[in-house]
Image (cartoon, rainbow, N blue to C red; front, side, top):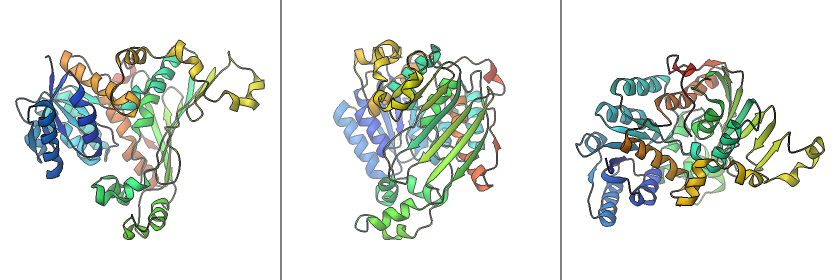
Length: 404
């Protein structure tokens, strides 16, 4: 097909940004259907698409109506977290390719339903984890694959993002995070950090996650934030019971003997970080100070004056930039989050258009998303170890590394 006709489901902050900042500027896509539960969002989207393209998309508050149409090739799911899996399963059952935005699952059975539906229908499916396409993440992956860090034994990652304003104004913004933080205590957003680590450790592709242990602090950050902002934040939140702990730490054990440490840290004051750290037998990469330490390039004397080498990742850029980003910079960066959005959406749309397998598939999605419900179980039961299912049914042993 020359262009992919898409239905965009979910027109909140993420959906609005992807639709108007990216999709309407891509040559390989037509937006033929839009949907959201809120009428004003649907009307605005349809009006703007018509104004910018000359063609008015079908508009509905019912995702089934928006998807089950003969002119829809693919469905982009950008709605609230809890709706992702049901919408994806409906779309695949009706023969549509699915690009699903990131979240954690609500139950392990959700993950199994996603896998079983895709296996039964064979509909194209891609998990739209944009951080797998980050410039630094791909450069470090390239260096890992070239052996510069030696054997990788431990990786750290985090979703460390001060979201206090977004969560606390959830009622006004009509944002789903507020209800989640009031009712759940878990690693609720694991895939931004876990996706790139999974590629580095070949998780689900020659290696796999076996079990996890999670623990959470008590919740205090959102109550304190509401008290400190009496003019802008709902006063009821000053004393509301937030189930979600302010900091959640999850430790994962892998088949190959590696460990992975994930941190959720979104309700205390802090700068943004995905906290990627790669520890190998020949070196280390640390995201927060943008530095690479390799045995071959440094001596023990550098251990104690390392601050002078902060930012030295740029010294490796010319030699080890990932080919995807070499080409991307030549052709022009598109989309938000430093260009990651443009790469992940283009990858999905090109796979659908050309009939190619999607690089981040349903097995990756299920394995990464299941961290959320499993962490919830571990925390609730006193930080007990919890087994991580093998959603591939043993295929992980022979699956090829992700083509990134």
